[in-house]
Length: 477
Image (cartoon, one colour):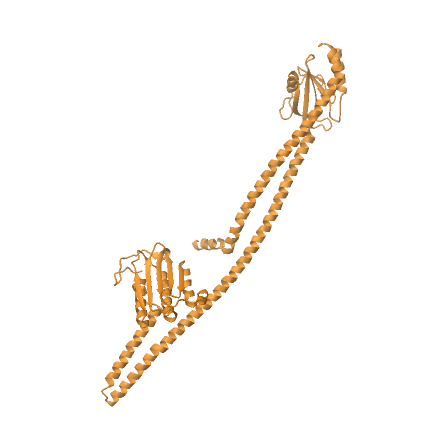
């Protein structure tokens, strides 16, 4: 079960290309979403203000139209009302006839209620006439008759209700204007249906939503195009990086093969020029000693001694080659003694004075760190021996807050300027060893010498498990 979850997690975990695509697309999608929401919100707010202004303008136009109708009605009966007494029934009858005849359009008419709620005039809804409609409400619970009477008592005003539209027989919103005849205790009014206004407002809102959806669609198209561009760029970048990685891998493979061949050639050359010749001289000495023993010559012992000495040289040469390939002191005693042995052997072999200095580390380098620094020192000393023409070398190994630091400097002729821009295989190997451990390698060179500074980070520094010390009294590193 654990392996199943592990395999599933590995399959679901994104690779480098997917991480790069997500890194590029997630901020883009987030920005596009925020921009879309802001644009939609601002568009709705602006459109809502415009729609409200349009609605107010249309309603004001309807109210102005109602005022004109009410003015015409009052002009039609003002003389009769002005001459009549409060109880003049004949004048009241004449006024009701005038108002009943004043109909306009398909749905326009005048109505009259007395202050007790009785309907006196309703030419398009005659079923209301003669009935008391106090407490009448529309479908939304808005008071009709009582509010009309209240407005008439207070001098007049406007009221919005839902009322049956004569042309359709269905309830529709209406604005009513009311005026009062205080002497007769009448509430006179007329109304205009505003369903056309509401339809216009609804159409405007629908148009706004359609434009917002269209804008969102355009933004979505731009986003998809951007994602396609990002994806295409990522694919091109990924392909380019893979090609570069393949080229670097091929180059590294060639370097490894070259290094292996060079190392094999070196070992073969040392075996042939060193051990092979020594063994041949041992063979000749032994054969000479055998012939002298056969003849009874007293010099047979000298030949044997010479052969034994040559055999001892062969043993030393084998040890030297073995030490060059993998020094045992590096594993047994640590980096400090291994470098001390390396510099001592280098000074003895080449005659170049080496000043080696190290300090006690508070931690110990792990195996990778020890091998890397040792190989860097070994490669540097080899380059100094072959190319520098130096007489003095200083090698310092210290520890700092950043990690282990090794400094190698000489007083040779320095690295030629053309070669510093195109380093050889040895310098590249040193740099790659440091890069593999997240370390750094700095090379500064002039006509007065070369300095190599190698640093390994603290991640490769471990605290010592035991307080073991070397023969020099230093903690192994």
